[in-house]
Image (cartoon, rainbow, N blue to C red; front, top):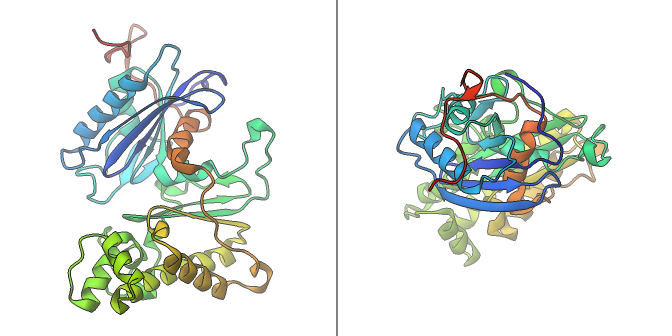
Length: 331
């Protein structure tokens, strides 16, 4: 449900929920981070345990005057209903979770929620409240890490799409992933060849040598190991081609690539940039992907901005008072 927005100067709590970690921050009206906390995501313990952990993180950073919570969460999130409409098994039982209602009931504060990548991507757009004008900005934002996430903004407006699914770039068909099983259950999607686990698995298929994580494959590629080099380059090229095609489709004037995979080095980024450029039509020939400018706080800052723009979901009440525990410090 919607209601009045938080006051511009009031602090808001931003939560970044990933498959391995929850990051929480108390964010002032001017964007300053006043308090931080992080804890492991109880991903194998089920949705109720994750909601409990989120509420615990809120209590840790809460301060008097806090007006709302914004959650940037893994999965396909529908901000209008506050629910997780689809998710992989990275967080057990996450699909179908009433995220906003569950957290509001546990904290007594109104909650707005969105996909984690989309929230981070919003920090790349001009802020109209600061005199910025996002009109005309068409942006593609990709986050390549354990999965491949994304967001799309057209004319300065972040696209939500049906059930909040807009921007899930990892599930674009990719010729490089033909026949490979994706985390969503389909085959041939970009994530299966381009995410960190996808690159690692492809290296093992080619070499017959097990590797437990992408960093090990990247180190072997840096040492000149041919199969490692080929796996890293193929994953990068798959992302570059997909993003180049999308840039042509949307007429993008900004393409941002974040996540952990691009940080493995120049072998990856050079291959991605070359594949991207090769796809571009003539009017876009000068366009090149850039890294995020939001830094490590992008997701929590994006989360903290959500209550000012998206529907707010309020806790259940009896006689006007929240039924859930209060957020004042516990004795």
